[in-house]
Image (cartoon, one colour):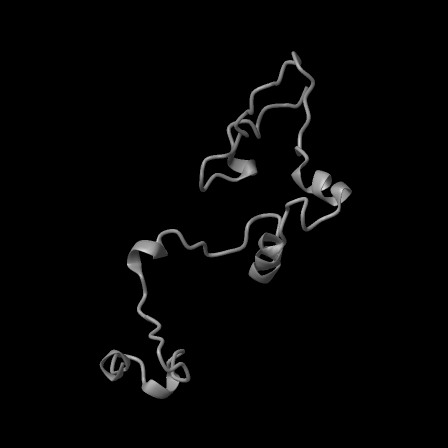
Length: 110
């Protein structure tokens, strides 16, 4: 245990300093770091808000039947046989070109 505690982190700053039979590895895992995100997903304003939402269980054993149905309901409902238009890429100006310098800016509007 003492050999494991004599690392790059001072013993008084280690997370496992009060735990007798536990060794917590405080090294950065480079393989796992590529899966870490820099900011919260688009529906959330902070990382704490996101963490709280995934901690909430969705099963019917923990929620009322109405809350469970609402939590697992599809976001978009399309009737069977209805045509769905494909997603179109938005038209954007090339980098460094402003609207006044665009080739369409000099054309008269119809």
